[in-house]
Length: 530
Image 1 (cartoon, rainbow, N blue to C red):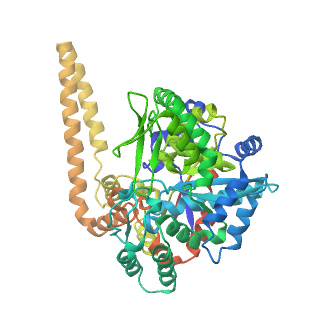
Image 2: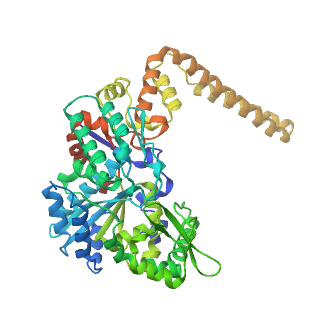
Image 3: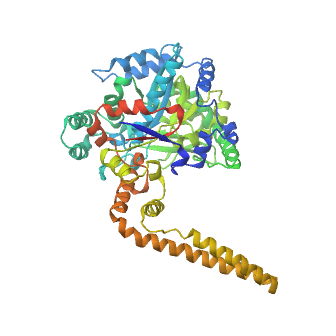
């Protein structure tokens, strides 16, 4: 593969808030920590040294979660052991348990995390940096993760949702796995991926274990450590914060205040805090906790109530039953990990901006926020079409109709642009306006209105010229449509729709190697691989 890079602002695919963050907009300064550059990382490392992490509990939890792996890669084993050391820090990304990894950007997130760890180790050799994938095992939005798309075909695990998705048993996925395997075709690489997904989804007991197995099969040799936060030992570390936050509503107050400030600065908010930001979690449900008018606490829809004293005892005795929502999960993550950076998508970066004051309240270090690498992956056939039509990959981010019109203008044998004619008409109208003003000054607006209508008519006529001439470029226009659909299926970025499977079939392990080669997280540029 080769790579070229463009600014995120040139893609017309990312929010204004994310673009402002990348540009280090000063109006965002109150909502961010250290900058995502090498100077910022040096500050973050020194800052993190002052915050103690219970590394023994963390390592014990990871050993417990990996105990079923018969052949754990030495790289992962080494990184788990390194987490015992005070000079070891993590770089973390998180994501839901999308089946077969879901859209491409899942892969991009993890590669960005691994690559950043490599770069930090090179810059700060006296420290160790462990890439971590935080599995969103407690999430209950099954509809978001129960499908993926391969070669334009939807593959769906059609089964009833249950509680936290990580606890869902995968025995009913046999038909779904077979459909995915069939679409991979027959080759050495497809055989390897088919065996990997079969081992993950048909030989592991639940979706959390299946996802860990699949991710380890793809990234284990790079030392990626996968963590499941749905663990009693880890929740025990978080229990004091759960208790204090439910009883005193600090997060709600802090996040509402920060969100208002963010919006007043002209930026969008992504997440909304509730008065109580925890769910009650069992094997069969994950439901919100609310306070009743008489001061008790209710688990919604399950006729389950706690007095204040009973709730405190429940948190102390069973912290694993309390699951943080989207605004409290980051605090949980930063308490149990020696983390210096979170790598996420645009929406994630934005909701993290709403959380800084809450971290300050609990005296927990706020991590550096880094947008994940975003990319489009081309192939030889698409490369050929782009270059044969004298287009650029950057041009493909333009509106389709605008791109077609521009192509016809450039390649037409006829002069389709009426700018010269309009300039002549403008000169005529200036003389008409002068004459009208001498007769009656109130006639000038009427002259301007006639000019505006004529300008619109000229523009429409020019569009008709181009439309008529498009027939002479029918093949090229068709190819532009084909390329746009491949790079932007259903009008979305390729990475947000297509699964990585067919790319892996084509490139094998070189796919990950090439992504690591060409991704440069600290540059914060959009990558085009061709």
